[in-house]
Amino acid sequence: MGLIVATDLSAIRRNVEKIKAETGKSVMLMVKCDAYGRGMEAVSEYAESFVEAFGVATATEGAKLRACGIKKPILVTMFEDADSATAVKSGLDVGIYSPRQAYALEVAAKKAHKSVNAHIAVNTGMNRLGVSDEKELEELFSALSQTPRLTVKGVYTHFYGTDEGSISLQNTRFKPFEEAVKSRFGEVVVHTQNSGAIFSDTSGSLVRVGLAAYGDAEGFVPSMSVYGRIIAVNHVMAGDAVGYGRDFVILSDSDVAVVSGGYGDGVGFKQKYVLVNGKKAKVVCNPCMDVFMIDVTKASAEIGDLVTIVGRSGKEEITLSDVAKWSGTSPYAAATAFGGRIDRIYFT
Image (cartoon, rainbow, N blue to C red):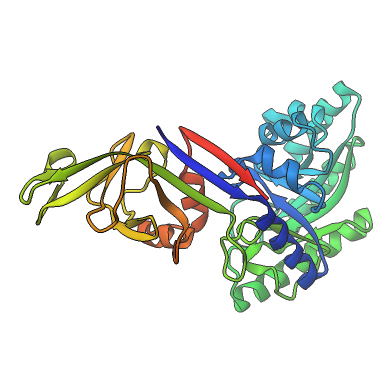
């Protein structure tokens, strides 16, 4: 019971190689939220040979990567003071924007007899995390002058939009911060580009990528497929219904298959259809917690057949962008929704 998530690791490699070839820059692979639903440890172990760094949201995620043997730099982008000891113990780089964070890291580093690498986060319009003006930057500089165990290694921002106008505005906002950090700490790693802005004209020697590396952006190779399996096939008469509360009334005699995996595993309420043996099969009602139902009258389906929720079957394909469009969300959200009772398969 549950879903199968299959990840093509070689697709991730090809996407990263394309990014490097076309930008001439190093790559930080974002593996937060379980590598966007693909399995953080397995993806990172495979990718360590061809990326320069990894990005995570939390220190706990970073510690898991260290525990599985990852040696490359790992940047925590959503750092919390309470995680200072974990960050220091695991040798993680930390994105900081406040004196409070610097002092907390200094205390933890001194206690552990270690040092910490920090990247200064700049707010250029997303208004999420980062120093926002000269006063905040000077306050952080003052704190860093009192925290000798912290070494500033980088400065970065996260773009709120990637159209030409937005990028130009954000670059203009970012430049004074970049220059101030370099003036104070010398040459540091500069990274502003995310998947949507990979090929934009911005400064820096490093790009942070998730969506593009995983193939969920136009022009890249998809790396994720999601499957269920048919566990029963019922012949339902016209006028009868399928699902809770007579959710879907059958208009003509139909064969309805029950598929493993439900909303508890990430199957969306707006999934329009799936693929069975290379043919589209309509989803006929809202998913249950553990299973969902599809019309296989024209699909010649049998118990045990794989059902493609995301991926290719024959000449047909369902992308994460399709699922996102149906749900009114993003490919990021669609990919990370799949969880719970997941069997993972990796291939190259």
